[in-house]
Image (tube, rainbow, N blue to C red; front, side, top):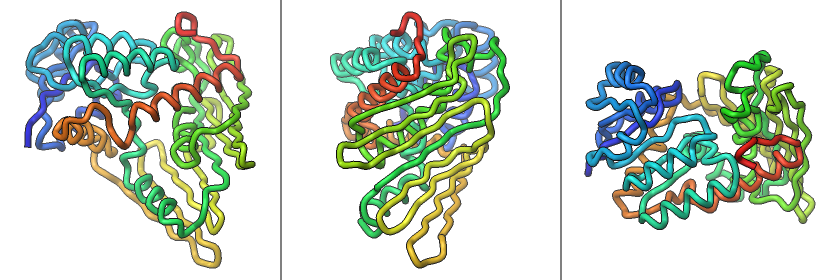
Length: 327
């Protein structure tokens, strides 16, 4: 089994979680970290046992010993940072959302394809045990067809115009930050909708504090999604099928639950608590695909990221959320 040298682009909290997960994989070596500050890079490298620390992303992308780069910067910079890594000949897994809009996602995929390089959006849920089990149940047909979904991701974060979550220049707003999760679930379990409606509560900074979404299908089915930084509504996706229901949920500690309710039977609840919150599974998928010579993952293919970006664009347009420089 080949060992891959990883580069980490960015030193925030999500990068820390990803590094903890990489340490669990025998075929992964964290070779280098890049930051806009060499001091931050050196501190991060010391904490995670990383051999090289760079004070620029350009140096990281140019390191000839790096095979794969994990882009963990704020999402307005995903396009620039991913293109930098790809032009440096590196395979890339980039945090969600893959980019700020569909146009940027297309550009990133085109660059990966031109360079014959691997690119995947780091969507965490599809690789987790509760999602895999839910998909198995749906595909088995035992509960019939999915008829309706209601997904929500909401917590009370308090309004502060100085925080990233409310700063448009840093991609602030609930839609792209957390609304992507229920939208992703709807796309994964019900397919691409035919119509989209959305309404948002817009903060003084222009970022959406809360957004409600409705997705309609020409066959009469409906899906709903809600995201918010203003109320502790929790994180869950309820999937209503012809012969029962399933609920995917998790707490802020990313503990995973799946509740299955079959008509006439007692509900069954399954709980999964993987090490490192399960981030290692998406990293393992990247290396598995590289071992097999694949340029995209069958779990999160380019087509899924394109459809997801298109839906998020439509939601933002309906909700009136505009990102200067990205719209």
